[in-house]
Length: 215
Length: 215
DNA sequence: TCATTTCCTGACCGTATGGTCAACGTGAAG
DNA sequence: CTTCACGTTGACCATACGGTCAGGAAATGA
Image (cartoon, rainbow over all chains, first blue to last red; front, side, top):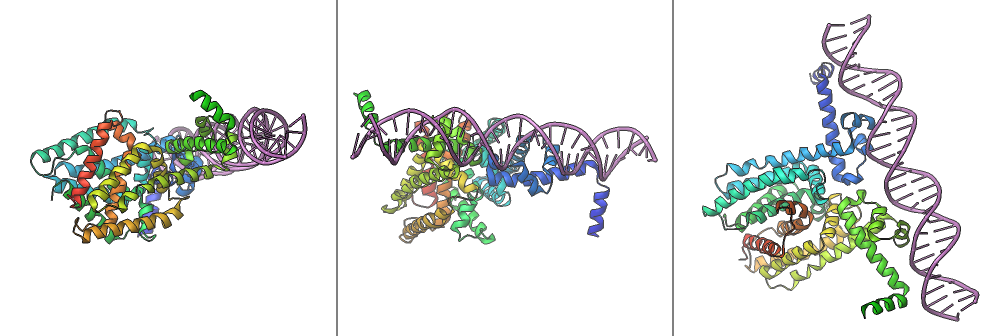
């Protein structure tokens, strides 16, 4: 039974399970609050309430507000970088860039809070993840630029500036998360439906792939 | 002489001049601080220091922090909407959309703080400008959608979804302001030069206009 | 059962914040 | 000179915030 299984899991839960579970609950709550209020507007009390825990318990797992925030941003960055995989093994821009657009649009829909926290962090000058920008992101970007250059040399797309293509991809795909509220308002106040998300992905892919001469 | 003219202007300045000048200084400082720290992270003391005025003086001109913030957002929104003019009298997408891209990219470069405040406001659910989204922005959007539809009907561009085209335009052009720090980091830590801004505008215009079949 | 580690939390503290206010300065009009 | 509206500001206040801590509860191993 589910109930029995839950009770059993709770009763036999290892210490690490309690820790892991609480950290997860806190991180989820923090992601939402940081996204909705910004770092400065978020309060530990708000996060605690959303997590259903006393405020003091948050400080047991995360020393400071900054520490909690840093973990939230790191978590997002990893999800965000995973979409890079699709770029690497692709034979051409249609699969590589088309797949990347699909993946990033899916992430925007699935993790809108995370995307907003990331955007907010970068907009404020990346005070806590500057090192990530200068190392991981820079390396990732260089790799992708080389892939695009190869496609250009192979005649698989027009010779566009890879850097500005990447910016356009990042901007557009994340726009559906970061400016989701504006899109929703212009959509009659209702969130995009499954069908509308499919249309959005198709539209973006079509415009971009034609824009770089890949179709 | 300039000095004499200044002294004269100060000595003969009307009360309204003092008010206007101080409001301008405060609004400029507020725009910068709100952009860099977010609404929650910004403090009246910080804004006062940046404006070179005592904190109590700010409350003489702006009743509350929210009031000051609202004025900053309104100011940005008006600049932002002015770029719409270019859309209207254009004979086709090359002039209309191309000119719009140029204008929005210039705004991103000239008013990066304003763009960030706007982005932050929308990301947090537009708590103070929801009415603008539902009235002015919605009307503006409908008008532009009709213009694009006309161009499509006239065979001047491919039949793309006008809504997603607008989102792509907004996202990409504002990205150069909102994510300017990230772009700067990926540019070796230096801001884009005049030449690089020209290249950026050209790249974006080329990809978008080709993407919609206008060139 | 007992000892030990981990987990939990109400109460508390120093600080910083948004906002107020009374007193003062200033310059134009009568 | 006097008046008076406008502009200025140091000092102050109530609140809310991030963070601490002592002491207790609960889980684990011997």
